[in-house]
Image (cartoon, rainbow, N blue to C red; front, side, top):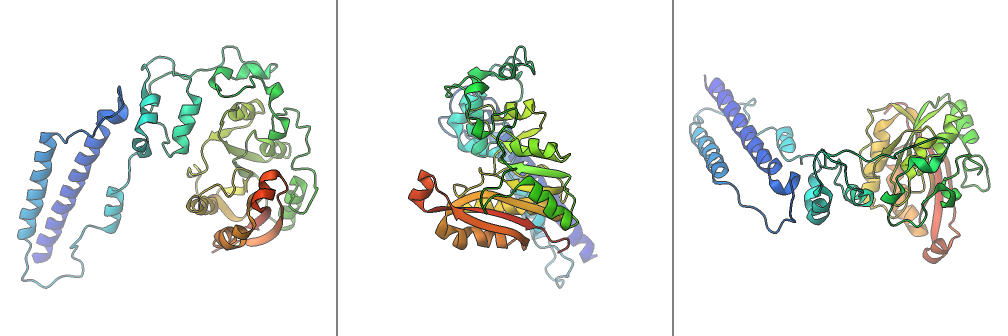
Length: 370
């Protein structure tokens, strides 16, 4: 009898807690400063009186029920004296795009648009929010702008160049081909071997073949214009590229190559199921400028999507020489991967010479079983 009463009481407490969180979430999601900003927020709004009364009623009910819990019976091992830990975790999860609250000025600029009309030309503003964790973006009800007459025969016609207000170049012809803006793939990137820190695609595929590991699907993190994905496409390997535009039409150029991209920052969780990818390449965008915690999360998310026997390719990662052994190698070693290739070399440009930077190229294979 006492056990039945206790279970019933705990059920009521659980219902009350869920109701409290739902009311709190309703208040947060309905605040005008989040979805319908018309002026920059000056100060936090007060909690409505009806919400306070409802919360007080729920708390009073919890206190009332707690007083009726039988104290004379010995505690049962099956009794729940506190809410389940997983319930507490879920109650603290933030809603979608909650990081937008941390940047009210940027959010106000972004949300200052006319619903059901054309979206403003604010590519840089959107990416500023994305890089700060405000993703997915809260704007929902405007029509995206598209080129008026895109043609494959005219690559420039596939870009709204006015969206890149800070760029002086308004054509693919004047963009640096060494950054990948070369539709004919004239440069021998991923094919030419110049030093020990290079790894070519033929070498990669040969290593996989000798390891009886087939490469069919891959992800190129920070892959820019998609040169790696284009090279792998020639070998019937599908590679999805993550990229940010950041002043130049990287996503549009991937599309011109017939490649699919994810417009996503490095800190975003990869939108793939566990263990479905054969290869993950971390390109030049993954470097020492990334906070160590973000780097740690990135590596473990890579591990999540890689299948057993799949490969992680750290391609020309650069850091200060001292940090490579003290900081980054221990991060990589946490994964417990087999080292297939580990090569370092000096970074010889002006920044590398000034800061004592080195390059690391590593190919690592995930264990087939843990």
